[in-house]
Length: 238
Image (cartoon, rainbow, N blue to C red; front, side):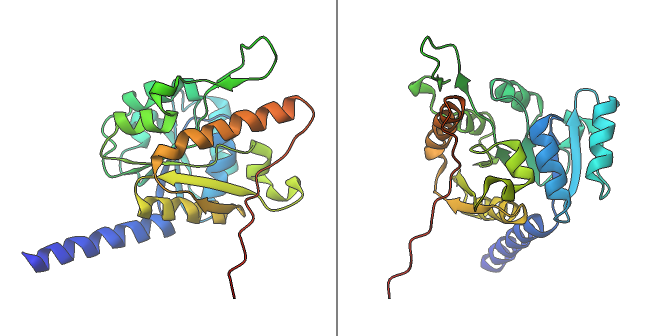
């Protein structure tokens, strides 16, 4: 029995290694975030399947052609079948409903770049869009898929800089949180492949912090003080 457990553990490690090096990635959505991440992940050698409500729509066909590397587009439910990673490239307010519609995602990494922003404020400064009792969008998604591995990432920058990090004028940090360390490593590899710098900030309970980082980032941009996140590593002590 002990040897069987070791074999199972080894198989799991191989599966994660495979996901990091040549994964099947289901990108749910075909908007700006999908247009940035899908081609970026395909260029790293991953197989991209776009999940769309209308996979025959011309803009989806154009995205598949732009992505290349054998990318395809199917209905959302079909896209997640056999996928190692599911990217929720959908509006933050739609994420829960989309996740509910995808069926059982047990064992898969769910990459969550979504945000919730309340722009209906009298002073022109947006607020975070969820009550404190609800935690974060990422935690709501994890609660819907308790046997999946939700990782929050790619939510603190704009699409232009996902595609072209150099346009920011310097290095860009991508904070990452999630309860499964191996899944965070897989996402960190995707981040590095986009020429961005991952910063592992630990478990998923900190996702609300990342989502609120986006709110103050957006407020600064809309009030004439745009910035980007670069979390400079501290030099190692001699």
